[in-house]
Image (cartoon, rainbow, N blue to C red; front, side, top):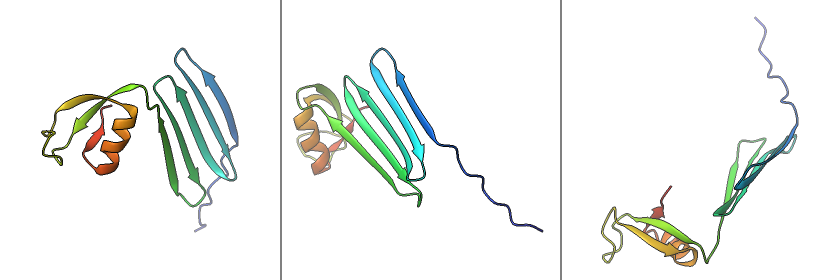
Length: 102
């Protein structure tokens, strides 16, 4: 019985521009890169040939986001939703107090 070989994936270069976001998808021998640029957040996703994934999220410091507390801070009860600036959101997530509401 022959061992199955995987077919080589085709190279891609796609750019989409919709009302509130720009999406760019590129796949080649180096891996796959997806970029999403919107008014609220900018996200870059990269997966290399070994399967390692790197995600970068850029949050605007002046935009207001919804933050959900996980109860790690005694001043923020678990499950409470707060409206905070991007700068405060970065600080709260870094300290492990909760996450960005989807």
